[in-house]
Length: 473
Image (cartoon, rainbow, N blue to C red; front, side, top):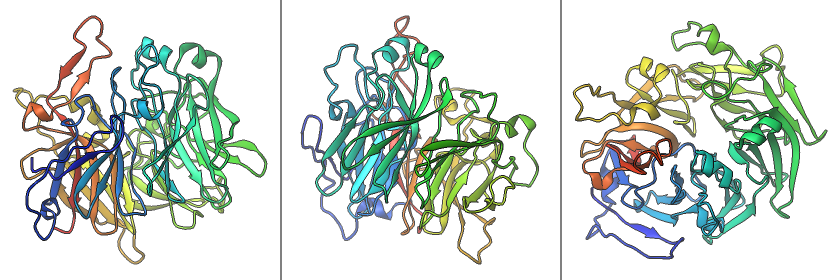
């Protein structure tokens, strides 16, 4: 791999620089269509990433590396598109949270949330790492964190609910200066006797408030939309995760003006495939927002209900000022096919990653096939493409541009992508699991389902890479 540089400025406070020699007129990576950087050369135990990536107002891309390990937590990084330099801001968020010496080896293993910017700060939350019984029982709880871009300082707001994780919605109200997060129980007794709680955190004072119990038992919401009136809108994930008897397509809203959580029952749109045909009845009962971003002014948001949500294959505008019960508030604006976390808006262009064959995207979980060994005689060489549509007024929003296979110049191919960001210059930032050229780049997967009956770690035939796609080339 043609290295640029990496700087570690947190954790052990080491300073490492890998030089690529004499710099030419432009960074070497900027002239490549797909430029990749091996994250497992930094930490072997980083094994995936879900959400946790964004382009900030300083022009840099901030992203996380996650793990299921009991010995190492999530990393937090910055990529500078001018220098093609990756900087490690923290190699283990457990250290940032002050928990490295806690008994039971609990790790803050993931930043499995959106990253939100407000007044020069980035806000996000942690998520537990080790999903087995001992790990869940020892987990102290998820933290709300801030990172100041100008100074490199972290701020730990603390744990809203001890033992609860945040899975995984978080958002900032830029007017009220408040953070909202969804607390999720993982311990058996908490799932049996309690449920998911909506919390607010005052950025200035750090005060935390338990606003409402959203649903009994273990629940999940990936994104919040905070409108220009400060109302917090969200839905609950269902497919492959949980089933709620009274939620087949509900939309929830917390209104600070009334301090109440309201439920609008069965209002989310029914699913439709890219060709206009209806999805199955089973998929229609699993409607939820699986990716979302506010539009300028925060009067509206753009959302999808991808293959792990309602099975819908359109991009939508939600306008809460219009009638929700009648469906007027939901406007389909593009047929894009199935997508999920691997979606990003930059200006008026919507980017997304899909398997070449859309049926693979509909019915395969990338996380389950990324382990396929390329040396196996049964190996199927599925390839992922970066695609986009223009949402510019006057353009045909259903014309899909294919930017090509996610493969770098040395032949590495993307196998799982659940974190995507983009900027208006045409650069798209991809974090995911890729094939490797050597086992120096491979992930050391923690076998939490097999341990202690088998090996603790397994070197797998894929690795974690941060990638930049230059769609101008």
